[in-house]
Length: 585
Ligand code: SF4
Image (cartoon, rainbow, N blue to C red):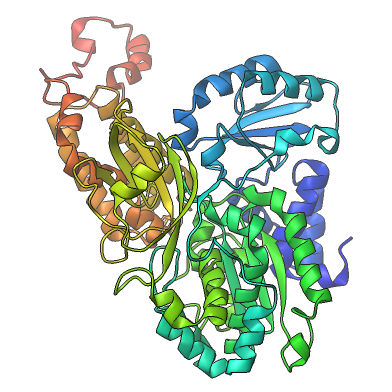
């Protein structure tokens, strides 16, 4: 039975998560009870359960293991890790073992690309998996030892800060941003943020001051602040580190925003894969309440604001701000039509600022140090610094912070990358940069990025990378619009056909045409960028695609002759005339 405060449809995700934790799935009976208590239909609940990959209608193993499918994990021998896990635990991938003790499956990137092969067990991060670790895990699982009694090293996640810069060098003291803003004046602080040139760090780069101003000016009785900590772009893990070691500053930035726009409630939407951070973040929030930095009359002023943590449930699309808002409201994370934008109609259709973790952190630092301090770094159009998550073929993967304008070759030299074939900047939805373009700069005016930076050396096959990214998008499409739902699946199929050596010249042209269709007609950013891995590599490495082609004019994508087998049997024929030639020479 739900507490009365919980009996609201917006609480649905939180309720489902609690049920899933308790029963290892969402039982039919629970769906009935939730439907009755929230006064919503069963079908709405089932739609939500089926939308999020971390919810299940069938019981999972008592130890539910998911292994990351990120390209960086494949580069770290994920295939062997997976088959070893399957062998040692006696469970097939994608199934629950007969005795219900363990289940094993794949999942999208878990945000541990600097310390893979990685995965999750009952939602908690597993890093640096290898055979000895798997052997130890198997013993603990067979003895049914609760996770809370497992040695801590299984769950060790390191920050890996390799190069601190403007923001990472020194965190601000808790409360100092707010104190300084109140002393300076709230309007003047917003002007200071404007002067700093701070642009959203998610990749799109919208002016932060302008966003906050639009929200403050929107007519409404309530406003909200939302921190997007749903970094799901494969190769991105900086928010994990910022929330592990700089969370106070992030919460300070959210509180500052609330003071400037007049909000009383904020939400940190934390990706489900970062469950290991949840308790720590709750403690920091409580400490801030105890210190008078959250809650009623913050710092003795007429300023009321609090922050709640909401956990995602394994849907990459929820990183898109309007999908994230839908998810916060307890629904499927399907992106909304825009306009209206969240600044005027966001959470519960009230004006809402959605910024990412790094943006709030930077805003808090600007409140303390001033706009000129921030603008002093970076380029004319890209002020300040950018925090990068670096992984792949380099000696020192981890977190690096650079002033905007830094050249790619400088970054590669710092992280110990040699024999570089190319770099994926901005994750699968970003761009593949070849070794001929290493002079290019990270900046909104050249290479904009949310922070993912994956290095590939010359031992890697570019088409394997493209294949991994294309499969990722097909898996993560939310299914709302046809060009993306069908288009990403067709892209995957068409690319596989070429990469697996069944393509002909016409297939590359068809692939390109399909890319344009998905890019131009999809509803949101996911679909609009899903073809980027193919398009950016087709442009740079056309010969790689050509090399895979057969010298035939056409080969169909399915076995038409095989499909006629039943008809042949029924007609009792097996002569040449009853067979189709599928490959035109
Ligand atoms: Fe969903 Fe893809 Fe359409 Fe975006 S483009 S709404 S992810 S189906």
